Length: 589
Image 1 (cartoon, one colour):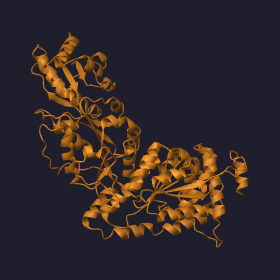
Image 2 (cartoon, rainbow, N blue to C red):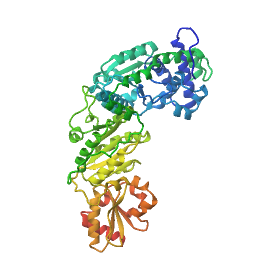
Image 3 (cartoon, rainbow, N blue to C red):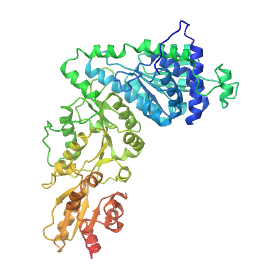
Image 4 (tube, rainbow, N blue to C red):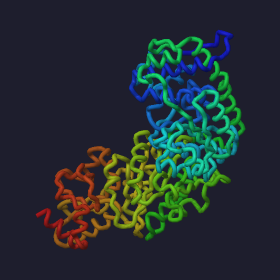
């Protein structure tokens, strides 16, 4: 609802704030997203942020140079919905009762369970982009509302240390003052400000936070209430607000919209002016960052694989070529000494935000949550991590999948490694056998416009197999070793176990059994191909036997009898390739 201030009355912040509080209580009562106590504890902070600090465009939630707002749960949404509406959002008061409408049209912030980690990534992304473009006009702050419980978690402390080490002074967190958070975050190096739960004091605290050269934490001193906070009528009477559901005074709506519009009215114009004189290279970078499509072309990639090297070594060389052709990729690693040859030796520091390498060696658990936030600035992160650590960040991968974040996880393992936990995620995952399949895997994931991908990379030195295929890898599965005559069955495998399957097929052939070998680096993609393609690779009438050192039920999608799945149990019992051949021979008799 667009309004103009039609009165000359002075701005009454107390009345504005109290009516916002009452409106948020009505929204919360209707949607049941939070506790009334949260509305009372954070209403002054939300009001101060929107009225005096948050740079955003009411009618364009995707404006690139907007301040980012991150929250750790839906409990803050009633306040944000109410404040967004009062900011002048084109909506009717009845729309505040419609949950689906609000979720689709009131996208003022990002919800992330590990919000501080995500916010650190978002702040880091802003610094990196600003360093790339070397222009002051591309600049925004990251504000995050967090519960004290989340702030006191190990993941939050870990990401907070990174924020301090990189001097991310564009990060401003807001929470209740509990659990001795003041001393904890002050010891970490944060600029910590304690303030009473009062509009003017909170807005002053936010002013101080924006002037700091370190990340800031604004802690609000809340207290108990001398009225029944669960009785909305009692609360409204105490606040001197009309006890009518979803009732807002016209002068309140006019005043709040006027205050915000008057502050941000030149925001878009100033941004366009600041980028008007960018050089051609910087203009191309910004254009790529602004696009929703995060596809990276493979057409100009120059890569000479080293035969006999590990997939890890070749993946590092290959990724270098991709970085030479785009600026939206950013490389991260939770073990930088081990993977430091990925994109040279330089590391992003507070003195060089332009560098494309981020060392997350001290953030093994929080690293994957941090890189989710890097996508806020339009970047496409790549993270190298040990496959043994993958269980720590499965929730972060799930979050990336649910929110279509274009992240590439390169998970590295020494033979043998178990990928059961990864198999159980319905995600685009490649398990390449050799360098040809590795190249095909990167080609496939780089061509995606959005959504996360996983590439499992083996550190074992591997010869490039003559029949392996870059283009067929993109299809998810293909025949890597053809049958010699009228074949008796199909051995299906992936990753390094393909080598075992090929050797076993040769041993079986010497016994008069002719088996086709099919490499399936990505079963999810293979099952998405046409029925004709799938049947050409895996004819329905032919018996299929899986060979993979995993305990996942992943392969039940193509093999329905578990006795034909040779998994980790069989790998533990069978001593060598001859034993596998004998086992398979017994299965088909």
